[in-house]
Picture 1 (tube, rainbow, N blue to C red):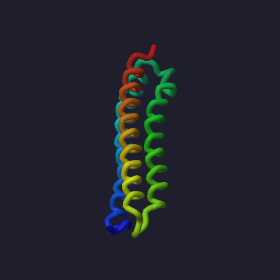
Picture 2: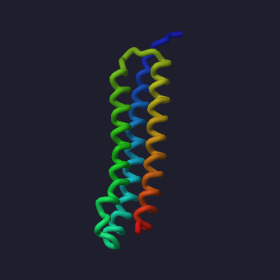
Picture 3: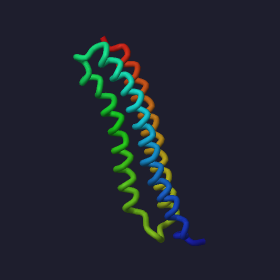
Length: 119
């Protein structure tokens, strides 16, 4: 059995793509939900507008985390790589991506609720 099959780099590349794609989905959802709250609080309390932009900024940091993880993983992708390394990169990319997406959803929900009820 070959330890370095030709298709191993495919799994590493999919893990790299999952890291950036899913974190970007989470960041865009968090930014969109927080932006609605920012607009609403800008009408009700214009003096607190800059304070309410924190959730939108935090949501965009998630996409930077995904970018850093995918760059680190892409440096290790080679034409002939061991299959276990490729599956490790796939698992790392999926875990970074899904955690970033869940965090983006949470930031969006909290930003929407916090902006609507800010005193």
